[in-house]
Length: 413
Image (tube, one colour):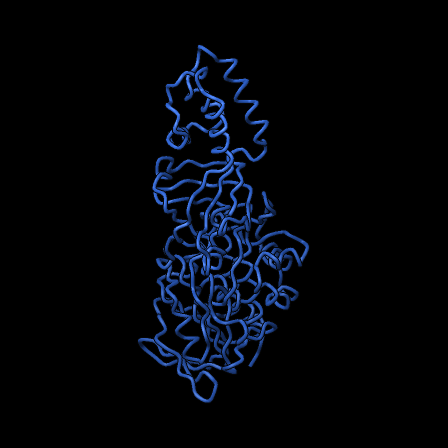
């Protein structure tokens, strides 16, 4: 085998971007992929449509999406940020469109289009991709990686990049291997949690509305009786709790919020655009209008979606067949309070199998943010989800892959 300059473990978006960049600089590159095909997690991104970055132009706003660890990305984004990512794919024949929330997608072809372009550039650069080649271990000596051990061989290179992904969607090959390799090189791994994942509730009644999607609602987080966060948007009920965009976004913070708290709840406001007073007045007008003609279920149907009816009737504790003229002021008040504040006790997260990304990873204090080089092992680099970085949905997590992959592939040993 010819001499290897750069050896990359993992053929996902970060690994392929690193390979494209390194080969464009004249490096002899190989990629080791444990699966039979590369980019399996990329192919399911955005349900196959691939929201590959975000068009937010203010860098401080962009960085803030990544929470406390976001500052680590300033250097990488200044060299290859969302603008450079869009230009990269456009220059390689991908037409793009911008959708709600500044999300950027390929105009056609989805995830397969993005993957095809990366593989084409790898082919042009002479990158060799070895599929069905799981790495067993790194051999480290004198603070440098000496070789990578596979089932069939020991491979030596000048430089090694770990781009194995995290633990989310393990069926795509992201089973946490990279954390083991990092530890073999002396790195510490921060605590791992599933992120962008559905949330379990202590209550079982959400299953009464399983599959129901509520739009334009507000979901608050109540910690020990005090509101600490809220989101406006869409959520969905499941057999085990709640899901949907705003729930998934909040899920990334739940492990931290649960630490040291006695209670953590969601408060659902079904009618955030209406005050208690306006909602009460509307219900009283409907009662007057439909007196002698309608029952409570009909009144409720005018306020909530059809597939939410069974649940709201269960929670209201007002007989669905009760004539509206017999609904008391006290019952009206309780019903309005319910619409404005449906409480759910948070009982943990769904598993990594259901998570979009991993919260936690290689400790950022042990990685040089300007190069992605290990501070503990001179010829070792990291890229993508294996690092302790994650963001909300909207293209932010794939941008981590593109930026860190590009930067890690830019350094010649």
